[in-house]
Amino acid sequence: EPEVTQTPSHQVTQMGQEVILRCVPISNHLYFYWYRQILGQKVEFLVSFYNNEISEKSEIFDDQFSVERPDGSNFTLKIRSTKLEDSAMYFCASTRQGREKLFFGSGTQLSVL
Amino acid sequence: GEDVEQSLFLSVREGDSSVINCTYTDSSSTYLYWYKQEPGAGLQLLTYIFSNMDMKQDQRLTVLLNKKDKHLSLRIADTQTGDSAIYFCAESISSYHSGAGSYQLTFGKGTKLSVIP
Figure 1: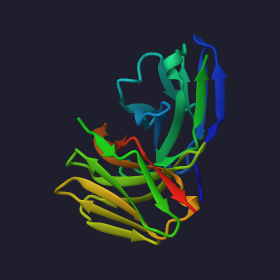
Figure 2 (figure 1 turned 180 degrees about the horizontal axis):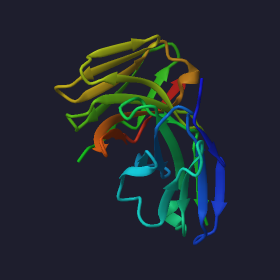
Figure 3 (figure 1 turned 90 degrees about the vertical axis):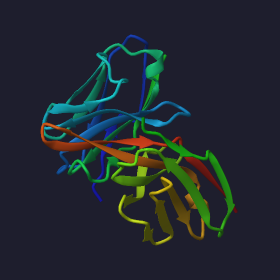
Figure 4 (figure 1 turned 30 degrees about the vertical axis):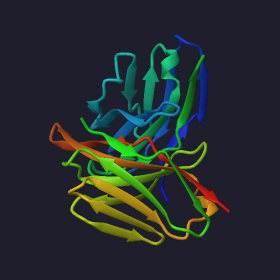
């Protein structure tokens, strides 16, 4: 069964450093998403992306965050200057059409020290 | 705003049925989902139900939807130790941008199911 893949599975960084989290969505999917889960809290929506532009973003997705689809297969989330509170599990997801079920990757655990 | 609530813990004996409950607030939800998260793993879609349905059965899983009360439940028959995980209820909120549909999911905090051998 096709799946969403995310790399790396764990990322440790120093506060203030830039990180890029990478995702390869399912190949025929058109909508892409990032969610995050801070330890012990709910999974939260960050951003959705369609047709090479952001469709929706939450309040969490401030100017420190950006997304990009640099080629036909990858979908990245960049955090420019990481803060301690950015430590979380970041999930990428994709759907073929906007109203269909979301397929999630296994996540990248980001630890900001 | 939208909110999804679940009890945090459930403990059952192996072989018994598990029932995980969820309430949601957005009456315009189109789909409601159950995701499973095993330790250190991602979110695995278990099943989902369209909002005009009352029930959906898929092998050991039964989803019941009471739209009037905005209540969703997941029943796992013959619960096994491999079912031990956190189960997330989620609702979809659709929105449109540039004529295309995309949607967000609002998740509950998750119910940790522990299966006692």
